[in-house]
Length: 92
Image (tube, rainbow, N blue to C red; front, side):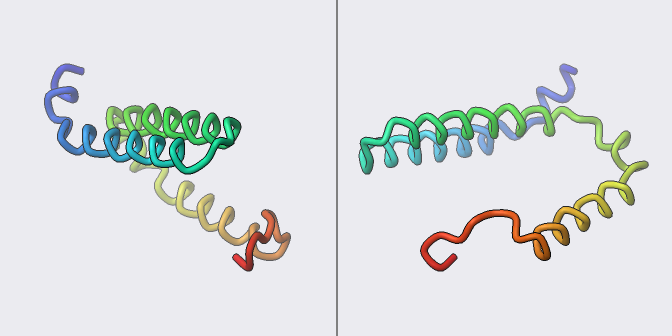
């Protein structure tokens, strides 16, 4: 575990956290909607936790499942198209 902690590019982690913080402050100054700010803060926290979990994940254990992961990703991409999951906002 110590070897993984030393091999992390902490400058990159710091840059990502800094950009997330700046984004949250920009959203805070642009809107007074507390719900939107809470959702953004929760999403940023979840993103940081996910980033650290993936960074310390042993990639050799995942390599044996690469075909399954690939087809699962393709499945999720394809399922969005015919069923129209999601909603259209402002023409997007």
